[in-house]
Image (cartoon, rainbow, N blue to C red; front, top):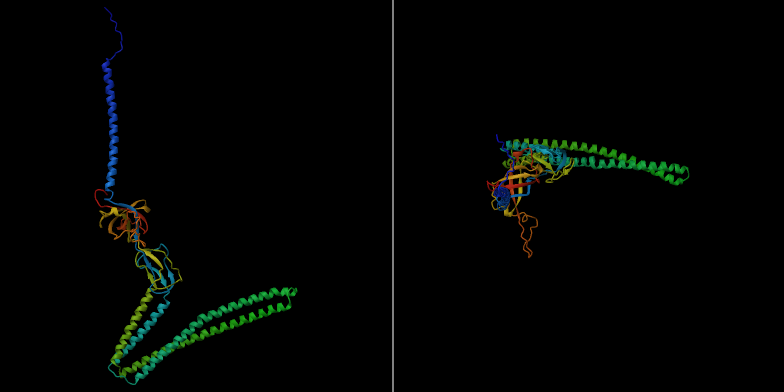
Length: 437
């Protein structure tokens, strides 16, 4: 058997095969590089396209951050003057409709209501009596009636004088006498202290006896003045008591005079009066009723109640403070009726119309959005509405893009937990097209 020896030789490729493999590798590498460049180029084209798209469509749905929340501000002031006796509000307090906010002192107005009611009763009584005695003629009771009227007038005048005297004595003179007693007492105590201090000095011969006697005399004089002031105070108090008694007497006289007047009218029932007197009495009743109703209204005006739901701000009223008619007490801001005033550039309003939808982003709530509707567009620019509009009729004119206020109505109920307050900064975007919003 013949043995064959097989030797292992390295396998070699022909030169053309090696060159072909290198070309395939270069072709594959070039393909990868061309694909990456295409992606880069596509991204550049996309960015440029988006930039151009934004540049040419930005005015279709205009946006501005020059916008604020606006609202009504109601200045609350009294319709009658008076002292504030009760206050149930404070700054930033929330009030509901018909809540009691301020109570003025009603004493004076209650007295006027009582007076007007009494005057109305008198007028109605007079008219009622005249209605009965119209068919009769005027008799001898006419003079009695006139005398009764004069007596009522005189008694009323006497009551007014007695009331004035009592008010003067019981207020100014009494307070003056009390203050005088206090002043004289202070002078007496000071003089007594001076005398006690100089007594030891006189004993030590540091001052003359004459000087010490002067201090003693001054102390005695001040004591006498204090005693005299006390007597004067007691006299004023007695005068006040007497004036009060005189006032009560005058009031009783008025009641008697009115009773006599009614009696005289009753007597005229027997003799009759003219129809003109009855018509005049009816006019008096109407006037007295009008005055009574006005007095009742004024009494009601002493109670200031909330006209609507709102928040109190800029409060200047304090308890015990005197307020005049129309003097501002505080302001009431109804937060349930607010809107947005957005100042858009004049170049952005070409497609803006009332009724278009608006998306509102509120800075205070980290961009929380609200829906709104364009209500109206201002008739002029903000600069034209300024107190001193700019004057452009000069040689150095620079064209500046103006801004025009746009009122946007907001539905505040859509986000009840987020309250829109006047003055808040917002960003508004108007939807003028449906495919770019």
